[in-house]
Length: 384
Image (cartoon, rainbow, N blue to C red):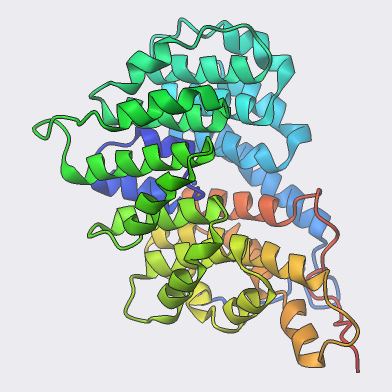
């Protein structure tokens, strides 16, 4: 999920939260995607294979996989609506929450009235998401209850609500967020790690609503004593396209003494904000991403495949900008299809979360709204 998925807000405890955040490759010599080198799997086939994996997760017994499946379909707007509609009827609040966030984020107006009917849901976070979704879809909704929720001593609810307000984009909510950010949570009920996470989430929401002074705490959090906070802050700064943190992120990627989880997050963030020279350096030095896919830990494999997908998307973006005058070595570097092949390989992973993360990464990397990319296995077209 990594981008930090909506379902992270539902986990309790540092280890569970970390598993969700890392969601949100000894495959260095991968075979072609098809049965043999002469019949590579087309990108359309790979996309459909990823969709099938998402559909399997959406019908599964694990509610968090069902929620992640809805989120994964945001890269395919034409298919997201039925997934979100089904999620509204789910028995688990995390699934209903994610469905409503997807409806609001994508402005699925056909489901706006259905979102409005969920304003009396028994779960506080689901009600907040219903306000968000209905408002974003043009429904006349009173969101004043979100102010009360924002002051809650429940860190999950507080995190959910501030995230929703940030995504809602209504700058009139900024003073309310700034005021509630100063309200501490009792230390006997919420540990310091969770309080720090909530403060970082408040800062992100403030930046999203135009208060760029709040980016300073996010930058500082990159160097937090808590590894989870560092990963979260790096992910947020990449999502916010904060180019001023680029040098620090490059330093993290280069240093072998940094935690692999942080290096993966930094590489993903740089894939969003980096220019051609940075992307070139990432592709040249991203062996750690390939290696992380072979980890014994499914959590690490799930994060690695998301990073690989982000690097593939960045590679494709730069590739489309290459000029005939660029050296053959540059063409070969940006024609390298190892990432998309790695994503295909991980669609067969034995762990269901890794398979779903791979599917989500494939759908983002092969977003139809981007121009066509190289087919895996097709001949290089570099000059000379």
